[in-house]
Amino acid sequence: MKTTSLRTQITLPNALRQEIDQARQSSGESLSGYLNTAAKERLEREKHETIDLEKLAAQVIGSIKEKDLGWGSVSEAMWRKERETEDSYRQKRLDPLIEHKHVLKRERQDMKSQSAFVLRDK
Image (cartoon, rainbow, N blue to C red; front, side, top):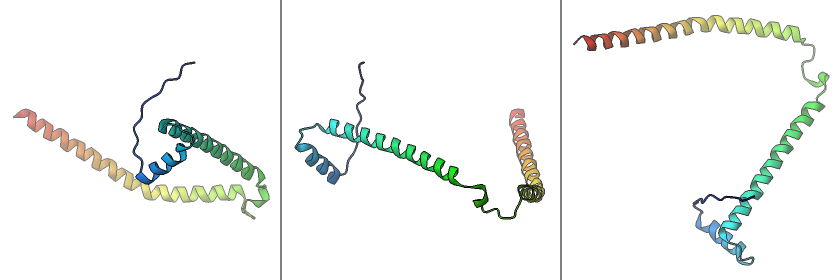
């Protein structure tokens, strides 16, 4: 299978470029080859780090026992009812604001259409 390459231009700080040149000097590796290898190694490392984090999350979630959730004597039904009450209160406060926003939007649209009509009449 033939691999294709894409030429890429990058900017490196002088100090980093000098370190890279020193590191690759003993092997005689090209700058392109050195940076290519470095990029592949980083991608592979980050892929494994992501997998490790996903495993850790699964282990943590799987290790939590229901009694350790911190709910104490609070029942799920009681919690849901409290949430519904809070949401209802919040919605009652937001509804007038949302309606006011829609009224302003309609007024703005009306003003635009009226000004467009006046411009067309001239």
